[in-house]
Image 1 (cartoon, chains in turn orange, green, yellow):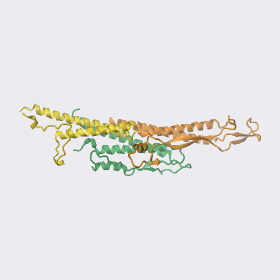
Image 2: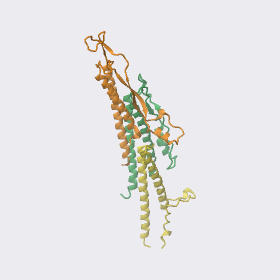
Image 3: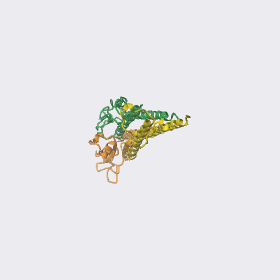
Length: 154
Length: 129
Length: 99
């Protein structure tokens, strides 16, 4: 009993941003991992976001009722959530650092470090956090509004 | 004798609440997609729709039990903010501000509706209580 | 004495009202007011039921519309009861009259 599923929409955002935060945390934690199980340095990972329409919105209810000649277009569906459709590897080349004494140095004496830029990751971290918090606010707003509607009866 | 249960203000309030709720759905979707590449922010094209919601009822064009057509409000692209590099037009701060303002409006309307209903209730109870 | 000649008989509730000859002649008699009240109760109860079902099954009804519909149904019922009570009171008042 939330305002037509808005809680569901916000929930998808919270889930997606959490996943993104996990990936960023993994990138930061492995910024200097020169040796992974698969061989080679850690590869930076990134999430792919895509819009995901929720099924319980008014538009799809109208379609289901099929009393209406023209169903609303996809763009008019009010309830559009988000989802992480993929977690992909960043294919940019690793950072080569000259360090012949390092156990993972190659023949030329270079060590391949992960293609993780901590500063860039921090920027992403802040963006993901802000997005997460904004959607928490949206949840609170939906909740307060639903409570206000329930109080109409006094 | 005008029927107190069909007060045009009640209907106007209810319709405005519905419009406010639809807008809340759009704004929530905008915020959910703040990081989605290529997502275009949306809003309702309110314009005169709000005034319509009240005017139609007040003029008494409708019979007591008629349901009017909903005022025409369309979902439009929100062009308040420029697109970022990935094509996303959701400005987080702007959308948050809209969400808050719209939410407050909803709370106010719901409260007013409750108070108006309370008045009707008092009018009916008034004789015996 | 015959009370029914002083107070017009209240029409049975199940009877559908005959169309008035002209709207202007339809006075605000107790019978008419009560009948209108009952019709309204029926209508609003139906609307409330539909709204509740729609809300419960994820249909298009909004929360505020449903709350409003339920409130109006309850209030129309109260109104009808008040009307009924007034009629009964008036009837009893008349019966008490010494002639």
